[in-house]
Image 1 (tube, rainbow, N blue to C red):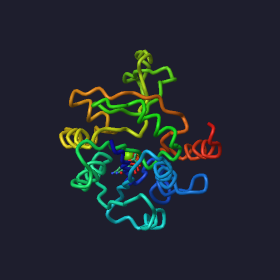
Image 2: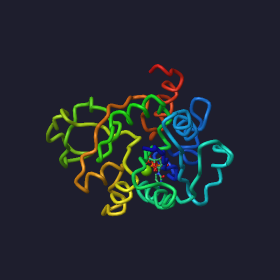
Image 3: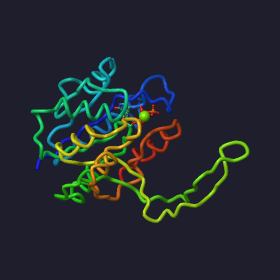
Length: 234
Ligand code: CTP
Ligand code: MG
């Protein structure tokens, strides 16, 4: 099979509240998006990488020069992550084959490595349901109920046994991912690709990821990402 990467990079980074989209912030000497793209470029298993940006993006050419080997930018980003991925997939009709495997990866996860990409590909194997990197939940999880004031009270503890935090890449055949995202009921409720695939009745395979592959969401995450980027062994 052939393996492709598709990176949604059309978000605005509201929670980061930086001066511009977070995927262009420099961490460990390079823009965050460039780290993620370079992990796929360095993988010998990946045929080509596609990056979805907003149609009015004015920064991408300096982050990914148009002549950069193995990468194509698609200016088809949408209002939600799901829309950006779906638009990207649709733009690749006729370029990708139904059976090609697509790894969708957040541009805001700079800690990805070629080893993790290889681990995902190996762990999913030829499972038609695809799969994703994920980490076992380590915190004790509380379910809240409305309280007299503030954010509420802890009404119950949810057993964390069997709970996983989803990472990316998430890998599915081109045909399955297109069908899943194309039929998902509510783009705002879909925060990853596997959830849309699950709604079709498939059970994507869980492959253990790594903490270094965190999603940079809040300002403090930048320093954690930099710590991992400084040490390839972590
Ligand atoms: N993304 C996208 N198109 C959107 C929204 C998000 O391509 N309309 C991408 C982001 O650029 C990011 C990934 O999806 O690489 C994960 O989304 P998230 O971490 O939520 O990023 P933002 O949406 O930019 O951040 P926030 O939700 O805080 O605004
Ligand atoms: Mg978002």
